[in-house]
Length: 250
Length: 146
Image 1 (cartoon, rainbow over the protein chains, first blue to last red):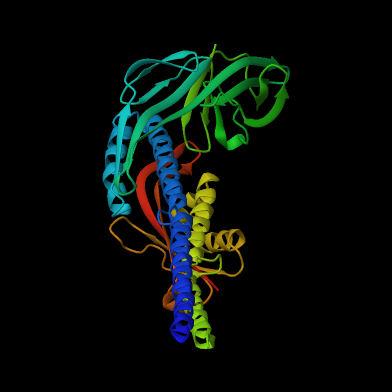
Image 2 (image 1 turned 180 degrees about the vertical axis):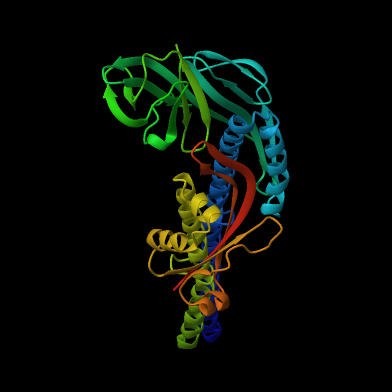
């Protein structure tokens, strides 16, 4: 009887340890599930994928605007976006990517000014304040991660304003120009090759960027060998994306 | 009398602990490393694209510059191979854009592969003309920890 009792205590130890082992495994499994739940879905990869599509769509709108300002073909943006829609699905097979877009159409007020869009594009040149603009709204679905209706919009704008034109002695002409982008920020880093004065004869010209109290950054186009005081004065400008604007003064 | 039971119990505990170690994902494990490399690769390509450098390298065929930029932005112990393709799958870069041993990258089990798309690029043709065309490219960056 005593021996049996002793044996029972021994079995109890094993049973107790087995229970502890089961508890260890259960706790470990639960913690593993908790710790790796989000790792099963590579969220960072998806967020960068979405950023990539967003950035690429922006680039596409910009280059479509650049193409439009060169060719005046208002179907450029719509055609490019239609191709981009198809190519995206083949670029990222298995993700279930669907990109939809709507192009701004008709009058639309942006940055305190009204623009009259034609298939998402518009250009208004030959004024003191001239611009080229593109606007498109996108909706992105990535069905493989259950993302539906991710919205983003792309606005691309170059606004060239001829502030004044000053004639100086010795056949010199100074054209002061400000250039802003879609964020109303002054465009920096432009050089001589980004500008071309037109509508009058000159022998040479140079471009310098100067700080200005009113406009913060102003581009001064200094023309040499100018006869008289020409009017009107045209300024052609291309930004680093290739977007073209022609402004006229007065 | 309970020595055998104690030994058995110890085995049970050791077995349980050994079993749970299977689930552990440490920062040095290949599974963790591949995810980290993917994040790293995406971030590097995205940064280069945001700065406007990636499109310039790809559309101008500046493969050496692309390789140099990736070498600067990726850690030294990360080997990479970059392939640039048309959307139909034809490889464009005739010069391989590789850092590290190609055989190592090809034979490694834990390769992080990143796909990145570019829609097009605008280039200056002459003083008064830019060429801005829709011409998509597909980039595949493979990363391996050396």
